[in-house]
Image (tube, rainbow, N blue to C red; front, side, top):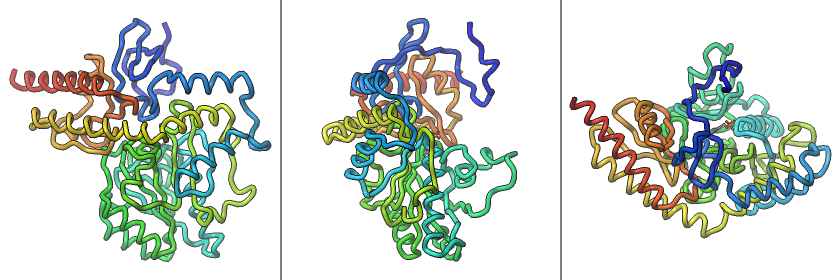
Amino acid sequence: MTTRDHLLPVYAPPEEVFVRGEGVWLETDRGERYLDFIAGIAVNALGHAHPKLVSALTDQAGKLWHLSNMFRVAGAERLSAKYCAASFADVVFFTNSGTEAIEGSLKLVRKFHSANGQPERIDIIGFDGSFHGRSYAAINASGNPSYLDGFGPKLPGYIQCKFGDLEAVKAAAEAPTFAGILIEPVQGEGGVRAGSDEFLRGLRKLCDEKGALLVFDEVQCGTGRTGKLWAHEWVGITPDVMALAKGVGGGFPLGAFLATKEAAKGMAFGVHGSTYGGNPLAMAVGEAAFDEISKPEFLEHVRAISSHFGQSLEGLKDRHPELILEVRGKGLLRGLKLSTPPKPLQQAARERKLLVGVAGENVLRFAPPLIVEEGHIAQAIDTLDAVFNAVHAEAAA
Ligand SMILES: *Cc1c(COP(=O)(O)O)cnc(C)c1O
């Protein structure tokens, strides 16, 4: 028997031990199968053990693992060109996680103003309910007190506004120190809230007027999760900078930040770096994942299955109106805003072999692999129905 005694107790996982996965399924060491509707927190976009990712990783593993950025990495040159061809961006920096992608994005914003002769412009405007990772910059940008508590004074240059409150952002942007805005077009951890088109367009316009940079954190909502390659495509605007991770590596630790040439003007030789970022193993898997996810027919599948999933969740809400207050999110990043705490329901679903997440205040979160099919959705909805019925029965008893 193994033990958790020597792991820092910052997590509290359930007892089950998963030892293999295939597609939307996970299997425990006892051979029990679970339907996975959280996918490693929106990471396993192509499901578990996708044959193309397995062969990309194992082929590369037999050739070359690591070089560092002292040398040219052919995979990084290819993948960066693919990201740029498919987005607003001209340049890419590869990282190993979402946090590092955010960290680099924020450094880029400040360096941009410094390169423009305005080093005093340091203020990053973020939002309540946001999540950007756990580094000092990321927790300060998010401003969530539970992530900041006990870690020393808040860093200067981070301001929070209410998600959706354009007037508040405009007021904060009046400061001569305003540098940029950091926002998830669809909030993940914060409760699966999609920003309105009007709000996001307002932020774009404001940044243009003020010569500030707009940074989209698409770590969770990007890379096909909403049915478009990038979530901001739904809004018809582009950011100056975008942070990626999670689904972009399909399960291999990979992140990136992308920027226009103009926004990245301060990021010259030597100002930023990473030993592992853009390593050949990550590039091999990242390229295989991107080649699959960026196919028009794949994204078409995500849009079709998303609308089916959305309708099924609305049906569930109609059957349980006292428990489900709202269906939230976009594409295959969905939430049910509940009238009760979601943890007991998450556990009840797990006991019925369905894995789901939680988020924000009383939100049950779903982020199935993008390869999910109608049959899996029917099974998940049946399970959730049974879970909600059990809550009703308990309340009546
Ligand atoms: C998960 C997440 C991050 C942090 O990514 P890590 O890989 O955990 O460092 C940042 N932003 C958003 C929106 C996320 O969901």
